[in-house]
Image (cartoon, rainbow, N blue to C red; front, side, top):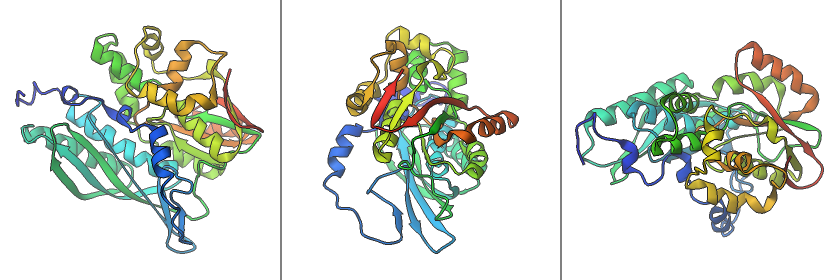
Length: 345
C-alpha cells in the first residue's frame, strides 16, 4: 500500500462501504431470537422490540439513549469519512427523539495509514459531534487491515418523548426527510458511471445531520420515527409496519431520489446490501406494480439517511409548511392503513 496521503484511497481498503456493510437483517433477526428480553422496569427500549437505540429511564424527567454505529469507508476523503460515520451514529439519537450528549470513537485502522489521514477522520467526527450538541470524549482504536470508524453515542430524552418504531397508526401520513440513493450513487462513482457532481451531492446529504429535522418535528408529536439507513426504505418501512401492526402503503412516484441515483438503477448497478435487503423485506413488501428502477431505489441501502416519519395526516400540511419555511427537505411518500405488510404502488 502506498502510504502517501494523496495516493491512499480508503475505499480500496474496504470490501463494502458505509451502511451497505451492515450484517444481513434476516440473519440478525434469527440470531436475536435466542436472546431473552431483559426484565428491567427502567429499560424503556431494548431488544423487545429492538429500535434505533436503547433507552434507559433515570427518573420521571430524564432517560438516556445509547447507540453505536461504525462501518468501513464509503468515500476516499478522510474528512468526509469521519463526518459521515459520525453523522450516521448521531442520527440514531435524533431518530429516538433525543439530543446527543457524549460520544466515544470506535476505530480500526491499518498501521500503515498516514497519521495525517487518521487525524482528519477524528477531527471531522469531532466537529460533527459538536454540531449535534454533544462532545467527543475519547474512544478505542485497534489495528485492522480494513479501516472502520464510528461512534458510541449517549443522548438524553424525556421518557414521554421517545419516538418508537412501533407507534404508527392507521390514518397516519408517512414522510422522509432526505432523498434516497446514496448506495447507488457511491457504487456508480466507484465504477465510473456517476459523475463528480452527483458524488458530491450524495456526500453532502450523508454529512447532513438529522438534528434540524428532528427539532422541527418534535412539537408535532409523531407516532413513529426511524432513520432510513442500511436496510433501505423498504426494509425500514417493513420494520415500522410489522412492529406497529399496520399496513404501510407507499407511493413510488413520490419517492425522492438524489440526482443520478435512478440512472444508476436503470443501468443495473446495485450495492452488496441490495440482495440482503430483498431477502429481509421482500416477503413482506408488494412491489408488483412498480418498475425495477424504483424497486432498486427502495431496496438501496442508505448511509446516514433521513428520518421516516409517521404522524396523523391532519398534521401533515402544517409539518410540511414548517419544513418549507426553514428550507429543510421533506417529502410525503405514503399512508398507514389497517392490515399488514408494505404495499408499493
